[in-house]
Amino acid sequence: MSDKLHDKIYQINCLTEEVDSLYHQAALKLGVSDSVMFVLYMLHIGGEKCLLYDIYKLSGISKQTINSAIRKLENDGIVYLEKHNGKSKIVCVTEKGKAYIAQTGARLAEADCATLETASSHWIPELVGACISTALFVSGAQMILKFGIATVALTGSILLAKGEIDVLTFFLFLLLVSRLYDPMQISLQNLAAIISADVQCKRIDEILSHDIQTGTDQLTNKGYDIEFNHVGFAYNDREAVL
Image 1: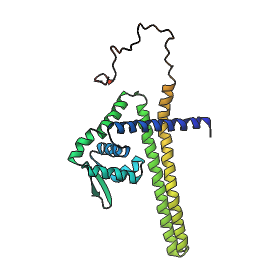
Image 2 (image 1 turned 180 degrees about the horizontal axis):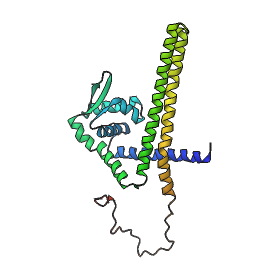
Image 3 (image 1 turned 90 degrees about the vertical axis):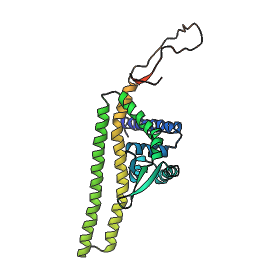
Image 4 (image 1 turned 45 degrees about the vertical axis):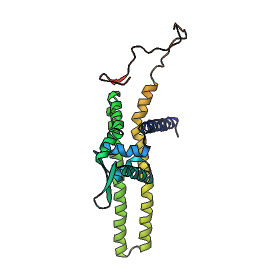
């Protein structure tokens, strides 16, 4: 492995851990678990409804943990489940849950938006472009994989009907394809994460390339008390935070 690629992977891992830590701290301050916060976040983004399958897929959390979080929210009267297109289920928000999400998931989403609004304008299009291109790449590759499975099944059925192969051979080919599909899909998702993180890595490089601010080794204060005078902080000119 080259040193450059090793550094990129290290930066990606550090960035991922920092982002996860920020969301974890936000969940703690709002008094919920990480899994509950993700469900609330998805419900806010989805307009108070979200497919259970999408929550499973996008969370990166085990189904058991997500189900436990949803059961807790159900017991608290925040959400309820409805059937959707046969076996699928959709998570819906109750009237009580709307106010609860406004104080939890909505606040986290607003913080995300505020962060993007104050970010450097030149790298936001790069980030969006990277996400779109990665999504197209992964979706296209997954479609090819699924088409390959269908092709194997169709070709095997034709050969089986003609008597050119036996049932055991046909079954073995289907088993082999199904076993190969999941690892390849996971590999594609990991590759997509590496590609999309390139923009974040460039942003980190940009921050680290700034000159280190230096002061002086001469102490000129008249006392030992620290006084904040005319100090403020805001995400923009209209919303003062401090």
